[in-house]
Length: 225
Image (cartoon, rainbow, N blue to C red; front, side, top):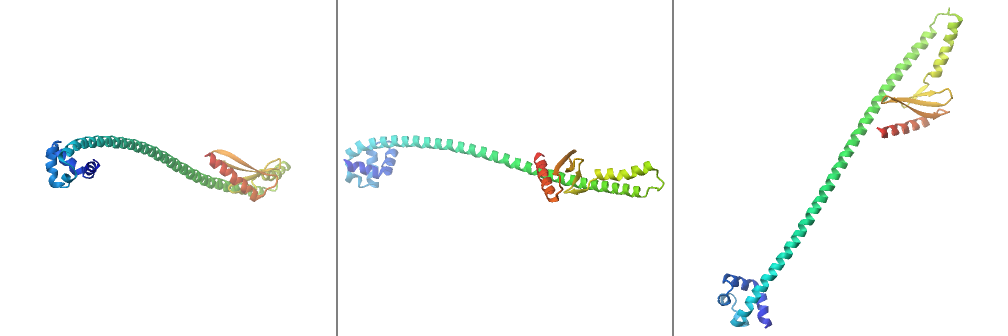
């Protein structure tokens, strides 16, 4: 009994093709297979073939349908997974685009802030140069004043340089004007974006320490831009 079944399984494609072409009629299928599978008659009789071939074709059809359902289910699951992965990928790309855009905007703002800083430094240096020239001219005019000044005028002339020197900028460090206040402490000043900023330098004026404090202040202002 196993030999006929094994034979049907081994020659499944040929037998089922002939069975289908003959509209499921075992006799016509038998005659058709005698030429293609001459060993068929050596394995089983026609009566055995007639009993087995219909059942074999029915079982094979059911199995094919089950496999088809399983394949369709697997394909549907794959399509859903693919759609979900594509959605996640799209979201990730969208987030990446936003990060890249924000990075570009930040870089542009930083570049603009640096350009504004350079422009303000140049304007401040030019203003300081003009202030120095004005003070120099004032000193020259005082030295050229007439010798016949009265005591009051002479006293004012004598006091003027003192007051001027007390308010004058002794020097500039990194584009910042340095002043010594009445309390004896040094501070540097600079106007940036229409606002006057100051940096405390201490009782003693150390240029290296002052440059370090000024750089720290500029980095702080740049971070607020």
